[in-house]
Each structure stands twice: as C-alpha cells, then as structure tokens.
Length: 232
Image 1: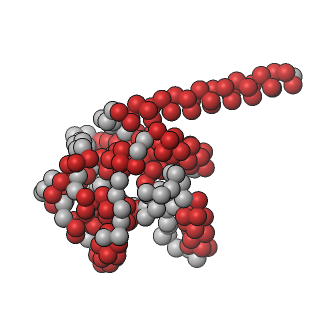
Image 2: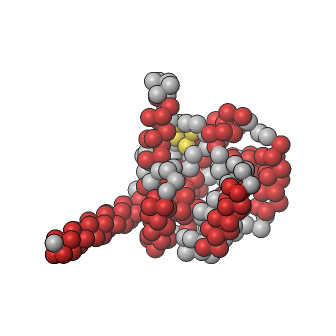
C-alpha cells in the first residue's frame, strides 16, 4: 500500500513538474511571439455571448513604439510603482493588501485592494483566469518569476498593455484608445492615459458607468506621479 501511495505521489509530482516545464516553454514563446487571444479574452467572449450571440472582442496589437509614453508612465504609476526594480513580486505589497482586505471584510465593506505587480497581472492574463483561489495565486507567482527570468521589462510591459482588459469586450491599449477617445494608442495624452490607467482595476464597471468623482480624484493623483516614473 505504501509503495502504491509513494508511486502515486511521484506520478503527481512528475506531472506537475512537466506542466511547469510546458508553461516555461510558453513564456519563452511569448517572448518572441505576440498572443492572438488569452484565456481571459476567451472567457469574456463566452460570457458576453450568453446574452448577446453576436458579441465580439475588440482587440488590436500595437508594438512598443506605437504606445504613448504617457500611458506607459500612467500604468506603472497606477499599478506598480516598483516595476523597474522588483523581480516580479512585491511581497510587502501582498502583505499590505491582505491586511487591508482583512480589515475591510471585518468591517463589512466591499472594497478590496490588490497586491499584484504588473508582471503578476500579465501572468494571470496570459495563462490563467480571474478566479480567486490560492492554487491560482500560487501558479501566478511561479509564472511571474518565469516571466522576469526570460523577458525584459520592456517586453513584459508591452505584452501587458496589449492584453489588459479595458472594458466589457475591450482589450489592449489600441482598442481602449479607440473605444474611449477615438484616437490611437500612440496619440494618448496625459489625461487620457491617466484615465485608462485608473480604470484598470475594474474596467468593465467603468465601461458601463463612466467617469466617477472617485475616478477623477484618482486620475489627479496618477497625473502627479507620472512625471516621477521611469519606463523601460
């Protein structure tokens, strides 16, 4: 019985190891190839088509040089001020977010804070889902280290800006620029960039409800931070 149990454990561990090797191979692939669709895009499309069979995603890839520097600065200022210095994970930010969320939960409040870096968010967007569970979070952390080991900061940010969700069916900087401002990602100004960056934590909601007083206040904070931000 013990031998069978040990064999089973080894089989599971071996399968898990091979799975991680496969993911690492995909990370290397995306270092040179642009993704056409991500799991979150696919899941979003399936969900939208439950109520609208004709629903389509809005997404168009644009290269690094075709994305406004203002947007690059705004996203870093809003989502991950330590992006240029960390190795994929900010453990202090994770602990602070966990403590904040615990206090919010005890107080019966709905607001939550994320502690994910841009690299972690890219890992989730490229390979995982929006599900919230510890196993998915662990895989996200492993993938973040893989991404940082293989890719430059510029490539990580380029990928993130092209696959991030910016509306109910809007993904990537180019589609977002067209959807909200009728312009191209390369032409986004400071205020437009700050608005898009501030929308990132809850893009589908802002797509429906528009600019709120809180969003305007947050945008002002992001605009003030942008001039201090270093980009790849």
